[in-house]
Image 1: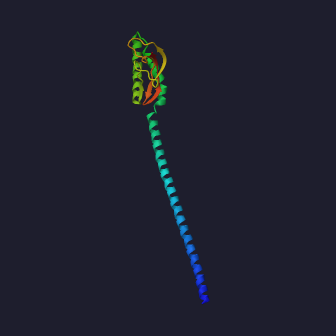
Image 2: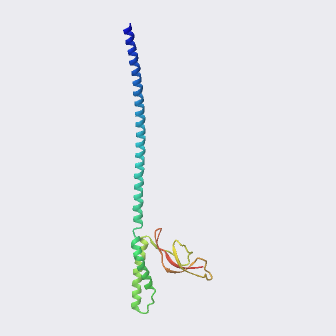
Image 3: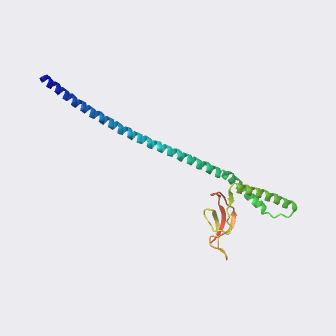
Length: 179
């Protein structure tokens, strides 16, 4: 009987060891499962962030391309505006003979062609004379006392025309302002 009890004792000890090892295995499985779920959640978060970054990059590139297209005439316009100023000065010269008149007519045609090309590219002259002074559009180089019929900060003379390209100022108008 003793043997039988010894066997029973051994089997009880074995059972306890098996139960303990099963508990450890279950705990290991649960902790591995939690770890995998956390890693999956982390990877999903990284994936969504990467997708959002790609969308942001596309939008940024699209805006940059649109701006480049919208303002492509900026550099050329800055180079041609002084030529347009020279044409305006040439048109102010008084002529007395027929040859001078034909030259002036040719200059007017060139000026009209340039202004048409400017307008088709979105380059517009800033209207200044008689307008209220706006430091965003105008550069005041002199002030004069206001005479009758003039409001304070009214532009009384334009020394150099200003131009905009869409919503950008290419060159502010140089003006004289009444005080």
